[in-house]
Structures are given as C-alpha cells and as structure tokens.
Length: 215
Image (tube, rainbow, N blue to C red):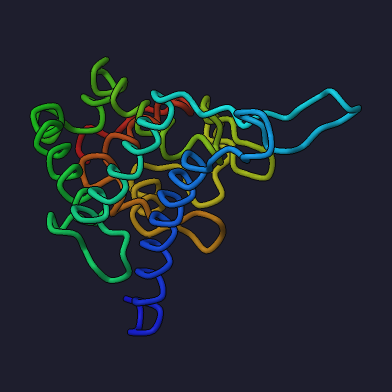
C-alpha cells in the first residue's frame, strides 16, 4: 500500500503520460505546412534539391493509436494501476491465484481420491499413480535431483541405496514433510498429504526398493 504522496504521484504520472501521448499524436498530425515552402515541406533542404516532407501519418495508424489510448484509460478504470485504486472490479493477483488453486483442487480431487486409501505398495504397482507421482516429482524435485532422480551436481542421487537421511518409507516421508538441515525444504504444503504420499512411493521405486504394505 502506497502512502498518500506516492499514491498521487503514480496517479498523476500515469494519467499525464497517457494525455501527453494523445496530445503529441494530435499535435503532430495538426502541424500546418510552412507558407514559404512548398506544401508538405518541413523546411529542411539538403544539397539544394533534397527536401524533407511532412507526410501525414496514415489514418488507420492514427486510429489504432487512439484505440490504445482509450484501452489504457478503460483498463485503469477496471483494474489496478492508479496508485492504491484497486479498480471497479476489485481484481487482485492474490485472489485470482486463490480462485485458480481452488478450481485446480476441485478438478484434481477425483484423481487423488482413488489413490488416497491405497498403501505405498499398491501405489507403486499402480501405473496411473506412478504417472501422477512422476509428474509431481519432475515439477517439484527435478531441479535438484534430476528428472531421473540421479541428482544434479551437488545434490543427492535418489536412484541408489546411499541415503544421507535414510531411505525407508518413514524416513523419506519425514524428509518430504519436514525438510532437512541442508538445501532440502519442507514439501508438505506445496505437495499436500496425498502428493507427499505419492512422491514417497515414486522415490522408493526410483531406488528399486519395495514399499511396506503395512504403512
């Protein structure tokens, strides 16, 4: 939120810039020819016979420019852009993000509902579950661990049996949910409970392990 000075500063700069563009456009269009020169001349002559002409801009180009100015003014009425004025629609990036996330959760619920009651062993044996888990892994984990789980430079290889924080189901779950004191953040919030469960099964599969059906 801007204070009063910067709020009005942004409003004035925005509005005056748009009005200045409109004035410059129409002033340029309305410049009259010099009376002492031939029609259309700017008065600039080189080499005695090369004259710079003041050729009018095409009408269609002027109309397009006017449309952009009108669009800018209408946009600033409906959307944020004039200091603290939120626009008559009240649109915000945060609200749009929350609405899109809520819609995505509703759309994904049928997909995750089938996997929610499955144990890790069943998840590892389910092709659809592993495909979903693989997408989650590539979207969230591949930047450090590589798309194949073998690790980027300086990051752990998840496709072998050498685990810094332990490679059991419970230990991988703890790593994902709480993070580790290194470069590993917690993924509980970004992935959600179902996502963590699927990624754990996927990581176990990467290293060739078998999941405990009792977990």
